[in-house]
Image (tube, rainbow, N blue to C red; front, side, top):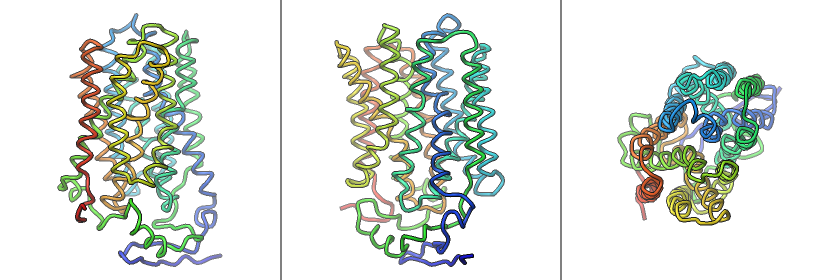
Length: 413
């Protein structure tokens, strides 16, 4: 049986080496990765699938009421990330336990929506999705410390494009019992994935990569490691933290508005479903593409470009007079506003360190909740001309804010 040893790199970071993934936990990290992918595939339906339900639910609630329900779902989902990360860091919540609770709540959210309970959908479904999202990303980050961005993009992308079948089914097959059966299926998938997820030992490192050489290489690439390990309260004292928070909040506001109002703006029910499915698919697949780009040009540049793309997409949507133009605008909107969340994981670790990375990410992720409230207050009650223009301005403002990002403690040249 191999014996694990610990080594430190030139910056003092600790690595546990000498064990393969199977020797460390009894299962391969690839199996864990696919389990997390499957769970995210199911959990994202509560967010991206809800937009497809809005045209069918208008006979029960007004559009502003439905928008506020989606906003509350988003607040609950984003607000769960930090408590979940803290409980897991204190060993008070295991990955399997978090996933099983999340499975029940995600399923219950859709079931209660089928029983005409908007608040039940928003609170139960939002908290459940937040538990699944935070747990899956946290486990994947720890299993792939040498390839965090690529694997996070792969898993978080499923949160968006996994809803495409549901969006199409909801648009064309919505009827009695649809939401109940969908909720049961989601709960089963997430619970099954939760039985597979397992954290590696603390500081585990894959044995085939020399950690010291890897750390030296990281000092010469665009995305360099943090200069120190920031606690959450220390990170919040940095101006960079709040520039990043504002950029993500603006992107979240734009994304939420597009999810809720794109099918209504289109007018044609079939075309609205197709446009929303295009947006969700572009969001998910775009995260993988943007992750690849950010490895080469740097996280900050990639984040600025994506937020600017999401802002410009709003004007494309507003002024598109053809079906190809509408679908192109939907694809650009998904690519721009939805990709910032996977980039946020990498930026957080590379600016504020890895030791408290999950908790720091959890606090920054609450910007999504702030963006949801901003969208509900500013955009939901306005006409499409004003709302899409305002959403475009918010997206571009997020790009401007993130241009100010710089790694704390390192001079910006």
